[in-house]
Amino acid sequence: MIKREITPCLVELFRKYPFVTVTGPRQSGKTTLCRVAFPHLKYVNLEAPDQREFAESDPRGFLSHIGEGAVLDEIQRVPELLSYLQVYADEARRNGLFVLTGSEQFRLSDAINQSLAGRTALLRLLPFSLAERRGTGASESIDDILYSGFYPRIHDQKLEPRQALGDYFETYVERDVRQIGEIRNLSSFHRFVRLCAGRVGQLANLSALGADAGVSHTTARHWLTVLEASYVVFQLPPFYANIRKRLVKSPKLYFYDVGLASYLIGIEHAGQIATHPLRGALFENAVVLEALKHRFNRGYRSNLSFFRDARGLECDLLYENGNGICAIEIKSGATIASDYFNALNRIARVLPQISGKAVVYGGADRQSRRDGEVVPLAGLGEVLEQFDR
Image (tube, rainbow, N blue to C red; front, side, top):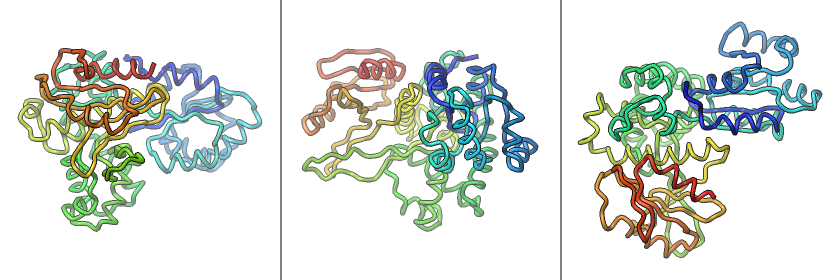
């Protein structure tokens, strides 16, 4: 079993708060993480109809039955229970009571903010990081990574990615989006999700997405919100600064798992990746999400953005912290080119906050150059660790 990078942060926060809430996509490993980290706590799955009915009909009796502390899985299924948990924690007056998990972002966050504000730490668990994936013995080939993605079960059980990701989309995603968004026209929704996958790394143009899917701009906006809430898509915000340039204001679209994006655009085996026109976009998706996992696995919020002005000057990823901004260019090619840092150097003249520069590329070697670091995908984490110090 692979120890998740987020585990030390989870255990530490449990000592400091009455509750820790872990959210993330379905099958990202939330249940396994919490049960392994806290084997002494009772486990209750609120997806089970009998447990859910007990918690809904007699919340006080339910809490009395499970005793002092438990892992409550899929807490978004019984949001009313959160108010009773608040009372329980206020009366107990101690930390380390309950670990809550959920796979729906926005509605669960709203419920927690209303009932458990100041009483719970919030963590997000995404599918495996690159290092965690490597620990399963999975192939480190870029094309294999982009094809199979990072969902733990695919690598733990050695599943065929196309079959596993197809099942994932048909079951979990369809069930979640129906519950969250009350979507009735599933065929149009399927087309919409596939269109989103085909626009990975591009600006989120809702008018164009809606038109291509045959739905209104309003419907497209609603559906994109549903996909965000169920941890399918991630929108990378643009960088805003008080500078004399017209900056792009639309976010860029990515998937929380690059393997799911590959499946949705019709890739059926890793051999197709090398010549696919979206290979560069998929590689960019993998890099952006690896940076996001680096943040989340340490208990931090997202600090990521991208830079693009009206003249086309662009930086794929800005990683911001108290040390300044690390500007990251993403290149899927395996050959290091002499002009890799041209755009980064130009942007550094526009943004004086930039204190580090790196290029993540599809090769295997690492080079330290005068302008910054050139690293393979596997070296991104080390670069971010150094910048965080």
